[in-house]
Image (cartoon, rainbow, N blue to C red; front, side, top):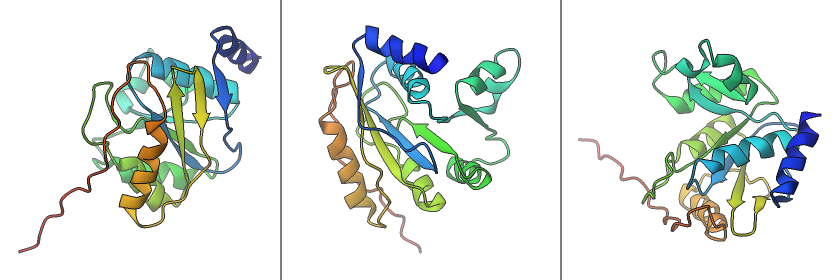
Amino acid sequence: MFRKFCLWLLKINHWQFKGSAPHQGQFIMVVGPHTSNWDFIIGIIARFALGIKIHFLGKHQLFLPPWGWFFKLLGGSPVDRRKNNNMVDAAVALFAADPQYKLALAPEGTRSPVTRWKTGFYHIAAKAKVPIITVGLDFARKTIVINQPMNTSGDMTADMNQILDFFRGISGQHPKVIPEYIPAKTKKSS
């Protein structure tokens, strides 16, 4: 019933889906570009409209009373950073614990323009051995574009450029330039 309501909400606001996501198995959804608070709202409505249980990560304090139940209902997974400061390992553990676990992340980590995307999603996908699905919230066409799953190849530069190329054709609520992928500098051992 709630799924039909969310489909109706998208329809009356002239939003549509292009593509689909698998209902079974695991994946990481990389959603962007993240330019406004509406991204989360459209994303949550789309999640319920798809009828797929897709999670997002949140600090464990969000899941305490009185509002913890609400964030869990929306698909939140609490991560206690006091116990493990490595978000990649914490997310990989969530995948290991549930063969149907699906996770959505905004790689910019902020609504403000950035010159470099966070790459934690890529490391999670590689370590958990799950595919990445790129999802664009295209406000210009009012379309939620769901790309085909891709597996990490081991060539992070090539994979990241492919991911970023997908988002270059997507117009966020407040359009911004999608950055080029610049590999992080590695520290030389002494």
